[in-house]
Amino acid sequence: MNPVPQLEDLGDLDGKSVLLRADFNVPITDGRIDDDLRIRAALPTIRWLLGAGAGSITACSHLGRPKGKPDERYSMDPVRDRLSELLPDAGARTKVELAENLRFDPGEEANDPAFVDKLVAGHDVYVNDAFGAAHRAHASIVGPPRTLPSAAGRLLAKEVEVLGGLLDQPARPFVAILGGSKVSDKLGVIEALLAKVDTLLVGGGMCFTFLASLGHPVGDSLLEEDQVEACGRFLATGKVQIPEDIVALAPDGHEVRMVGTRVPNGWKGLDVGPGTAAAFGDVIGEARTIFWNGPMGVFEDARFEAGTRAVAQSCADARGFTIVGGGDSAAALAKFRLDDEIDHVSTGGGASLELLEQGDLPGLEALRGAPNGKGH
Ligand code: 3PG
Ligand code: MG
Image 1 (cartoon, helix red, strand yellow):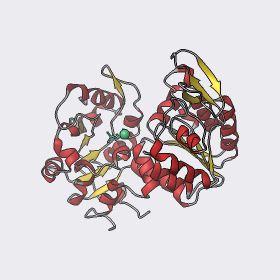
Image 2: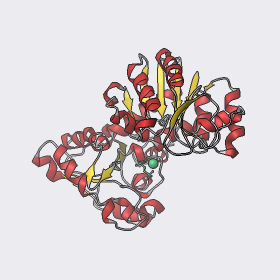
Image 3: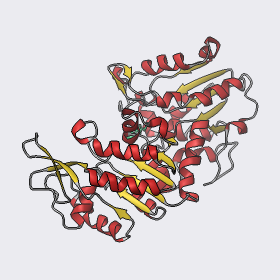
Image 4: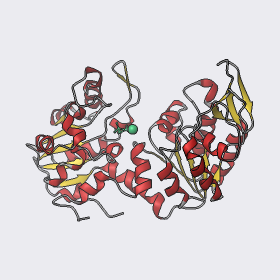
């Protein structure tokens, strides 16, 4: 991947006004932040900028999907409070401001040049530290580098180094574990990973389309008929390992039972079974590089959390280098309190998958095109 300008490439920052795009899209329930990982992850960049003498920092982010108009439920207030708690001292706090939710203006998602003008007005330089949003060609991501000297923040740089490294020279065996509900969402990334990995372990809702491609009945489990053929092709590579047992919910919605790879009529597979968890654990234990994205089952429900917990534990115990994609798998790690045992927990879900699939992101391309960038 071509390099993007780094903080050091911004030159003298003394007294300058910095526009900082962060991804502070954190989970919030009743005004309380459930997980502040994304806010803490931006602190090294903020501290670096303050240390370099920046006169002011205007941080901006989206939060949720308010669809182009102000909506109290997506106010940045909880983030603003948390940020000021986390900042080192009062002097620093007065220099850092957090703008209102970018997506309150339709210009953000539309990448409207007039909105970009509003964002950059009064700022001398732009820093993008929003890895989790760098796959969105939105105004705050791709607009400012058209005019302002720009750089990747520390978080963005680190994410790109670690995830990009998977595509370069991963230590082998390289094992990827994919879960989540839809094959159709992950077609591109499955293809990209199959070109790189030694083994791809598949669980979660999408495993049923793989099972169906082998002729197994899947009952009422998630099934994407139009992806059965693609799953057959993926299996033909010989690199894909799918579940050997399933935890299923009865048609009555109460009884839970272990089944093999054939889900009875009316039953719904909602987790991988203990045989699968053990088999996946063996493969993970042997690996030197491990990438995990997507839960193995409906882990929010205690009856269907065991498969995801087992994979999380196998990653935590692994001797290989472990990378976990953001979103649901990061949430699962946090729930099982295993996040500290992982080498790199990404702050980006969609962004990490798109980086693996495309080998680049709109936000990175934009930085390369900045006045101080190194060209495309
Ligand atoms: C995320 O949480 O995945 C990022 O913040 C991007 O948000 P989005 O999917 O709403 O664009
Ligand atoms: Mg998303």
